[in-house]
Length: 166
Ligand SMILES: [Zn+2]
Picture 1 (cartoon, rainbow, N blue to C red):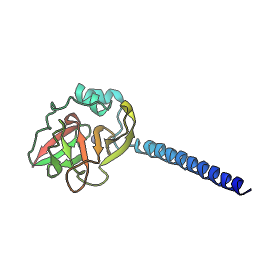
Picture 2: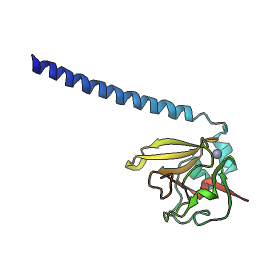
Picture 3: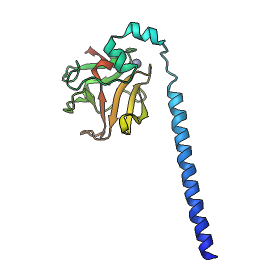
Picture 4: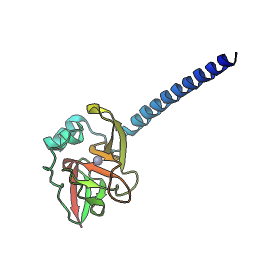
């Protein structure tokens, strides 16, 4: 009898654990859908007309530019990096550092809420994709291996960015 109770307890524990995982997955999906409701809404044709081919590939198709080739990779002027899709300010030059990875890297967003994060399971990896919070344009990914106090490394495609010098 004791063994049966123990077995039931274990079985119940694993069921509730499974249920919790499913709930988390549902919440994740829900927040992703919510995040798709951006201020800037344009049709695919409008984006194609506005953006260069490379900007469109990165911002709208979550492409990645070849490392070391981007305009802002080794760019250290003072100013503000804005979204190439909608002009929203995303990063300050104060937060930029050379991560030696071939893409512009920042340790924080310019203001909380400017950037939206989404789980990215593509290419057999589990990464955190970053999107412009205003238009939903793909920027790159954020990693937890940053060398500064924030511990974050926002790895961004130059094609996703414009720059306004101070
Ligand atoms: Zn944007």
